[in-house]
Amino acid sequence: MVMPPELTTGWDVGGAHLKAAQVDRSGRVHATVQMPCRLWLGMEHLHRAIEQALAGLQASRRHGITMTGELADLFADRVDGVGRIAEAMSRFFARDELLVYAGAAGFVSAADAVSQAREVASANWHASARYAAARCVEGLLVDIGSTTTDLVPFVRGEPRALGVTDDERLAAGELVYAGVTRTPVMAIARSVACDGVRVPLMAELFATSADVHRLTGALPGDADQHPAADGRGKSDEESARRLARMLGRDASDAGLDTWRRVARELSEQQLRCIHDAAAVVLSREQQMTGAAPTDATACVALADDAPVVGAGVGRFLAVALAERLARPYIDFASLIEGTPAVRECGARCAPAVAVAALLADAN
Image (cartoon, rainbow, N blue to C red):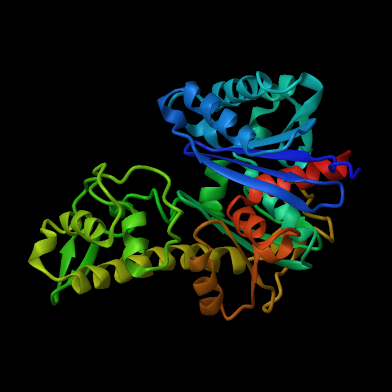
């Protein structure tokens, strides 16, 4: 009888989604899952999502966690969030089966996660970059998800980010709050061209980036896992109605082609924002965080032909970014060993895949 492979499970606990991936000792990915998880509404949403995810996974005795969910306003601060998320995961797995990813510090116990909250908080980008760096000589990881975009250069097998915390990464251009489903349209642009004039956008949550990219035809059909801004359906016509309201208009004031043109311009403005951040990151020499200024290996320029490595559900924008930067494009899915379906979902759940692989290598 063929014994099932010994699997390591990686978890990425976000504020809006829970993602998980399982890898064997050779690094092959066997399963990936993503669940909507409205963590800001209460811890019961995380508990329920974990239970649902486990139903689609095989038994595993090694679990690694990374997170961004500590930012949810359910928590008093990041330390509180790290502690409560680690505690929630500890309810499902034995103490010796569970480790928390702390960025450059590696894995720590769930009990030690609070004392190292600065390293643990929102460190999922570091795991993805380490995974990519182990498989590509150098490049720019561009992970575009539902809510944010990570831009992480890596050289000589290591991430070369200047920032560690969210505020540092925002200032460095390595974190952009632009995603392809949950971003309010009013955060994408201040105005848009329509019918020969430039119309200011309303500062209301009438529509999100899911409506924009749905109307352009770029958004995968299963990508938007949360309710629409108005709680209604997700047809093109319903997206157009929401988008029209951002301009103070009704969808019936113009044909669907008009709203598609508006969506294309908004998509362009979102891409331009990401492009601007990438230009800043690529304009500097890459210095490994924490390296001494005198370390000769600390600073090195990213080669002009170093690729963009696209991850996340919004990596269709990463493809466009690579074209603008005149750089080769490598899809994160091509770095994953597994079935086509697993590779596709794995590319959307890059930090979960990365944490699972890193923990499997550490054991």
